[in-house]
Image (cartoon, rainbow, N blue to C red; front, side):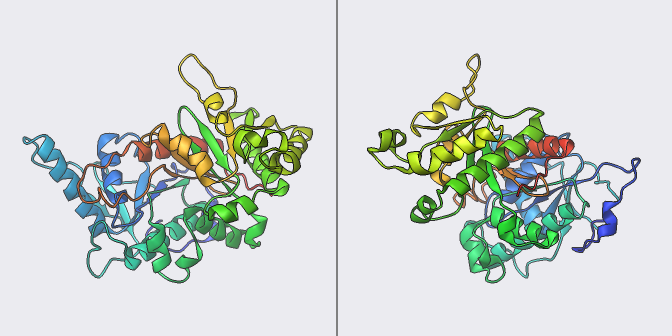
Length: 378
């Protein structure tokens, strides 16, 4: 049953004959495009959304469905009805109602959240949905978690405990560490952004640039290489070929533009290679992503690039297009993916947002759940 935000360890026990576990999609920030792309995903690719349900607020999803319907009617005036009503789930018994969008409502807003505006109420609701889904996955009640985008400013405005977390990754990490009864620092995780053409894993995530530079240590780089190697080896059945980006222009040019490559990154790569990890570098950061890019007839030199900080790795991925990018959290004892875009407040309420990245995230979550990718790497 998934009709209440509590979980028990007994729910982990499933007979081989039990039905397929459901996949939870968290609603994201109610003021953003998350609810609308969820509605569109259900409508555009219903076979992909089988065994999926939404953790969120029913009225918000219904409002999103109305916005999508209005946009569709503007594009196709003969359209009269929306064939995917939003329904509230009371109990699932591992079955979702057909031809509808099933929503598990944790609680309802006292009044609708305005579109396109930072709202503490929306931030709190988004945090609650993620926390519920994480706990459900950790207890084995669901197969995976796909998170629609939340707004970091709204999450912070929501106050404690949500203001403790800069984003999804840190919140999920904290829930998993609490479940495992261990300190957060003993459960290191990494963000991987993936598309058909390029994959990159980040040494640090949501830090200021000054803090991110300080986080480039041999220990952090080596830990990133270990997590990447273990997680992708499990997913693919083979070891990934990893290219490591430098930090400085031209990867330091032999120490002329900084010694981080010589003193920090190269020793970490050498240690990783000694452990059997197929890593090389540090390579010049302005060319390593081009070398890794996979295009038709031109396989890249690397399966994945380890980037030293957030924007170094995400700018190349996002430049190639947001429609198919997927965020995967590596190192968690659960499967979590998300679309590679934000809340897009400027589009919220128009019904025009593209659901392609969310659908790609659902597709990847199902694949990863199927191979059991929930590698907690120490």
